[in-house]
Image (cartoon, rainbow, N blue to C red):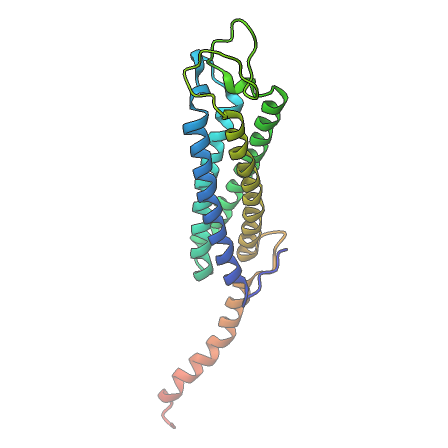
Length: 220
């Protein structure tokens, strides 16, 4: 896991960075749609915040943005392996993105489980349910300030891909974090490509100095 191939490593890092950017964009768009359009009406119905839905979708949007940032840093890192600031940036962003994506995936799975268990009753918050309980799978006639048509199917069809993409982001971020450890030479990835290159430069430097000093020799 900690081996960073000096020939194929930069290309793989760039590919992972591009994948993170793509996945991050898709997750951000899906999270924005489900939070801004589908679940906007239950974010604060009658001053009662629907925590499991609001938090899950806000984390999803934030995770998408952080994945984009981590992908950009990974691409820059693939072309500038010796830049210390990029190495630290890759470590920090990939670590934070792995944690946030894991929290996003967990939150979305929790929201999906609650919604399925309650037959979507949480999605009908804000409706007039004083007479009988209503759910999103078989809504009865109720006065709602929003359109309840297929709200259950739409929400689930957006949440499930978001959860899958969040899990994919976790895997990519962990891989980038391990690469960052290898490039910095941190435990448990002590052997790294940067130290190897610096060692090679150190071995070739005396030879270069000898070639430069040769013309200065009076006997030449």
